[in-house]
Amino acid sequence: MQRPLGAQISHMLRERGVDVIFGIPGVHNQEMYRGIEEAGITHVLARHEQGAGFMADGYARATGRPGVAYVITGPGLCNIMTPMGQAYSDSVPVLVISSCLDETAGTRGQLHQMKDQRAAAAAVCDWSEEARTPGAAYALIDRALTEFRTQRARPKHIQVPISVLQAAAPPPPPETGVAPRAGAEIPDGLIDPLLSAKRPLFILGGGAVEAGYSARDAMRKLGAACFETYAGRGVAASYALNFGSTLARPESEDVIRSADVVVLVGTELAETDLWRDDPGLTGMTIEVNIDPAGLHPKTDRAVIARATEYFDRLLGALEGHTLVAEWEAAEVHAAKKRWKAQVDAERPGIVPVADALRKCLPDLTTIYSDMTQFAYAAKEIWPLDNPGLWHHPTGFGTLGYALPAAIGGAIARPDLPTMAIIGDYGFHYTMQELGVAVELGLSLPVILWDNGKLGEIEDSMVRAQIAPNAVVAHNPDFCKLAEAFGARAVAPQTPDEMQAAVRAAFKAKGPTLIYLTPEISKPR
Image 1 (tube, rainbow, N blue to C red):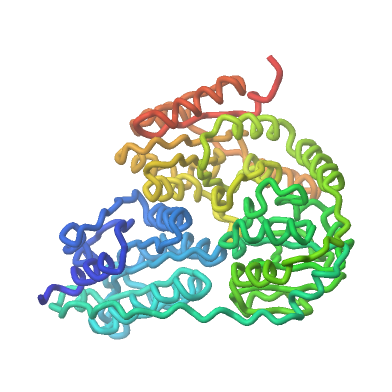
Image 2 (image 1 turned 120 degrees about the vertical axis):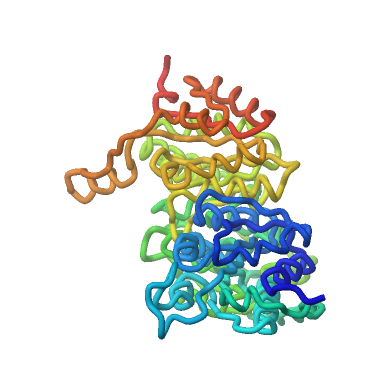
């Protein structure tokens, strides 16, 4: 049946498996809201488009399916561009659909007018296109959804002129079945060097998350050691030769230099993985990546393939293999113990609180963290039993990510525990989204670490011999603020009280702000 295109888009998305949309309606995109309820889609009303984008991101990371957001022309799109940039840097499938003005060349002074809205969005996503007909809108939506399944997942933006959204349109075409990509051929040259290596080493990135058990089995049979990037945490879990997410430790360069063969799997080994210029790749370097643009310049041999394809091929080659690797679990254990002490010395008081927090969480708790010193320390020393359980705005590095992303994650996993970790300054960016968690009755603990300042920036200024300035802002009474939104709030004074508060928060009907300061780590 004929419907306005705005309504047809919602029906099309539902037919393609989308069940939740995050966004904010306005006069320019209200036609997109005409068909949401009729299509059977749940809409989550954010308090700011930035929050909507982070919710879509959190939903996508929790499910592996695209997170979808509806926004208005101009400021609505500008507000969601920060989440789009974060999703781009962290390879998250987010689809943003916005309205746009019918024309901007000959008319000035229109509501929400921008000089080039499409081009602005293109700067922070995989591609940004305008659909001027129903057919173009349908084709672009299917293109985005297909690329999410078959390529490196990165955000897309589609804009539709207001008059096109309002006009009657035929139904979208049936979904075209896309055959899965044929498995990549893994040459012997990417396998054989490992079979004779004395110190084989894997560096597992976010692209290795899908490999899971096959990665661990292959490394165990090979006797290989490994590091995990922040995005790859949990892939190797409790594997005895796993150095963990400690690539930022300066000593990790020496470990990597000691390896005769290094295999990079699903990682660009970027600045935000290492925080130094030289990774230490002196042995043969093999790389497995689905993105040709992501290959490391020091790679000797590479294949464009998925991590599962590579590890399945490696496991086949290891049948009957005689172990020749010389890594020792004691070496790995000693290094991790030494590096944990370094983290504790660099950021005093956080490590014992993080350890206590980890011990009280239910199994399969998913954590969304923000740009805060608590998270920086915890990510290095907090082991994960499974991949995909900790999400952090690693690449773009935006503040305010954790709370709305955790809301998206909690919506995606209603029967599993979700928690947010955020700093006092980052909370200012998206604190209004607490109202969404209250509205939806989400059992969401929000750990707020308040050191009363931009602590990481102050430390950086001191290291650069700059007198710290503009690093302290007036904070509200965060507990009263949370209560004003209708959330629960507690301020535990000891690690034991914190653990009790967290356990209670997972059982509560609605979110709980758990307010912590560095004083909690001091003896009483």
